[in-house]
Length: 308
Image (cartoon, rainbow, N blue to C red):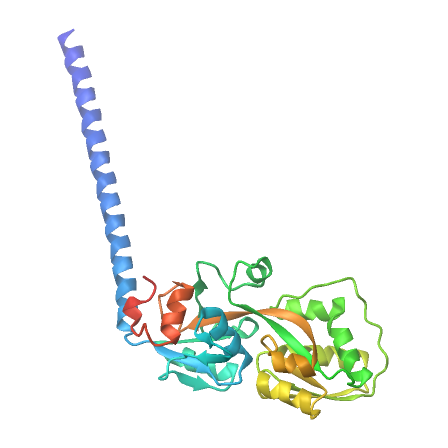
């Protein structure tokens, strides 16, 4: 009888020791995981700090992308009837989307902005106010850095030139806009080719140009005798060309200015997001609108202060 009691006691003590050991192992695992996570966070912070000075990359004056970005972020302010662009005076100025992409890709400390439709895997787009730059978030209004793609023209422009816009606004044209990463709006409109033999010159935004090239290519399949020349020279240049008649259509990746609206009619062919891009080795994932304003006006100059 005493032996049985001793045996039971032994089993109980063995089980207790096992439970204590398991508890100890779990605590060790939790501690190890916590240490790894802390080390990961510290390494991330270190990587950001190692980037040093923020190298601001901007677009040139006259760029629709610059106009839209500076207005949306508050970098551009109105002083009475005047508009003052407070872009950081030490910012590197690039004259095209491709140039911004290349600069950011090759410089770990840089930050720039481009059309969402031109975003590629060579750079990283950061979230803005916790929201990713996607067509879905632009359409819902959750992503704040969004702007229209406009095509402008004189009221008396050749009807054959307007036929290109008719194609763009058809469901077929809007589907191309969506496939290229922009926000289109299908309205149940089918396009009927007119066998156009028009020679159409289109000038303007470097951001709209890649989309316009796709649309023009599809239009010429329907109208093989049409000839379309596209000049990629900036939104303001495009509006000037349309007003002066050196181009039938002008492209702008921003809202038209009051003086432009007085002389031109325009159509919003799609909506686009402005992606804020950094180098792929940059660990910053999210920036607020206030931080973007501070970065692009030169108030915030070190990566160690960004993302906080």
